[in-house]
Image 1 (tube, one colour):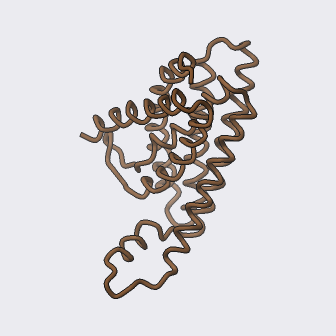
Image 2 (cartoon, one colour):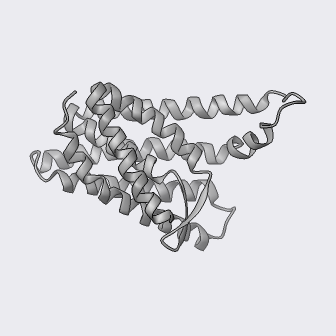
Image 3 (cartoon, helix red, strand yellow):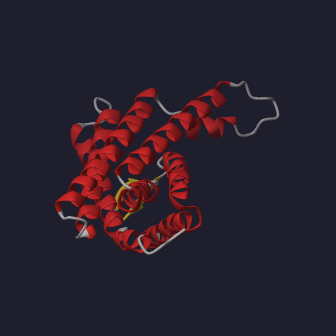
Amino acid sequence: MNELLLFIEIIIMFSLLLLAKKFFGKEGIFVWIGIASVIANIQVSKCIDIFGISGTLGNVLFASVFLATDILNECYGENNAKKGVYIGLFSVIVYLISMQLSLLFIASDIDVVHDSMVNLFGLAPRICIASILMFFISNLLDVKIYSKLKEKFKGKKMWVRNNLSTIICNCLDNFGFVFLAFSFSYPLIDIIEIAISTCFLEVIIALCDTPFLYLSKRIIK
């Protein structure tokens, strides 16, 4: 069931990204990056079993940010792709700060959601820092690699630069986050297994986003 839902989520989320481009142009993609960055950081709290391995939610929306910056790079240039990364970074920082402040408020006697909010949003500082740092590094590197490959192939072989940049940077993001967030808290072998299993999912999703990148070039606001 989870495997089917994964592909349904891929189709729906990537299609919504294309709709954002169709109706709002590059501004719609900027908005998408902000939305996806925040929701993905909420989804990642939930663990699931998929393809026989344990992983977390959020992979599709995290991948959609890479797709969004690739679309910006392809259609509007490298500077706009970098701007998208900065918007995503700012959105995540605002989300994390605002939710941590929300938890500091003393709940009313009639409140029924505070404990659930603590469970969902009470992230450890180390995990927050690892998430923000790797988000910024991996997405900015994705923009740079994509631009270099675009220049190397003189605008041709879009599927090559899309898949290479996305897969490399997604795996860097996963390994970097897991090692920064969980080193000295979990055995090294467990950390490596978590990183590899998540990368496996990211590779599948990255391969699925290529048709949507080609479709994005045919969409005009």
